[in-house]
View 1 (cartoon, rainbow, N blue to C red):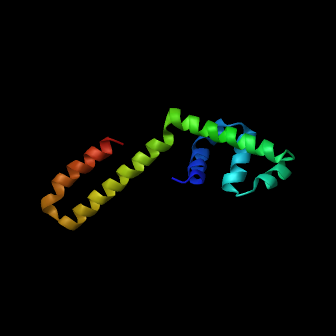
View 2 (view 1 turned 135 degrees about the horizontal axis):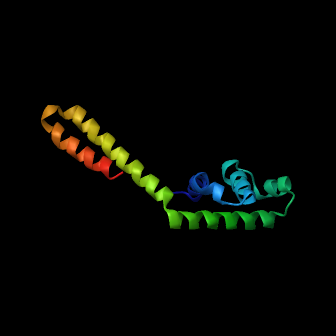
View 3 (view 1 turned 180 degrees about the horizontal axis):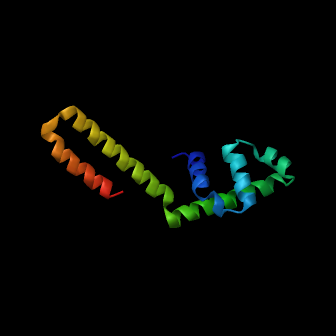
Length: 113
């Protein structure tokens, strides 16, 4: 996964755990596509201070994910949902004879969510 996308997702999940300043700078940089210079000008701080705060915020997001694994769990659930949708499509196409086997497989997948 591309780093910018990953940080955007992590920011949605863990953003409230960051300091207000870190969250705002990360949102400006990753979600609002502002440059370091634009952010520095808006916040009246140096470009280097923006960069340092971004790095610290990024590191915090990755640490939260390492410990809590919310993004990983969400990805796993989405994959299982896709598998279930595929099984449902198979049921719709196959007719009555294979239905019971497919239903059991779907129940197993649902129980693992």
